Image (tube, rainbow, N blue to C red; front, side, top):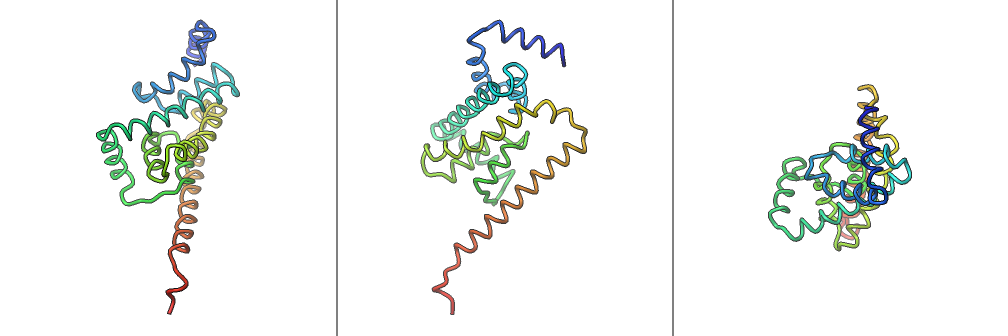
Amino acid sequence: MEQFEYTLETFIEGFGWLAPLLFVLLHLLRPLLFLPVILVCVIGGLVFGFWEGALLSFIGLSLMSLVSYLLVNKFPKFRKKMSDLKNRMFSDRKISVGQVMILRIMPFVHFHLLSLYLMEMTKTRKEYMYYSMLGLIAPAIIYTAFGEAITEFPWYVSLTLFLVLALAYVVIGKMNQVRLNVGLTNPKKRP
């Protein structure tokens, strides 16, 4: 790992002032290269340090969210593929914005699938980008700061972290369901 880290740092430092731009571009090319978000953010932390790495990851992920929005709205085949994936993974399941934000923290949940959920929950591109960017703050910070540590945790610590996130996902879902049920009942229609 140390050799990889050194080689990567040398490679990126060779680009000088273009390195941050290339790193943001790596975020945009990440889906084509089949790289997980966590890996790219960890690389950002290793090469640029915590603050700059987190900021660059946030910018790259935000631009990727915009690209997702444009792909889904400009290419009906892409939207159909994403809808089919959504139906296979979460058939007949309604999730809240808060749950999408929790799922964004989980390392191997499909980025574009979560973007599709946000698109369906929002009315405009501006609203979509607001919630999308809000939901990208935590992963950019967590993955950049703790990405390397998370990948080196013992299996039981990783499992515990996953279970805590899953529990938060379920609790937010239940709270959202209660809110929806309360909002759907009409006190005027009671006998």
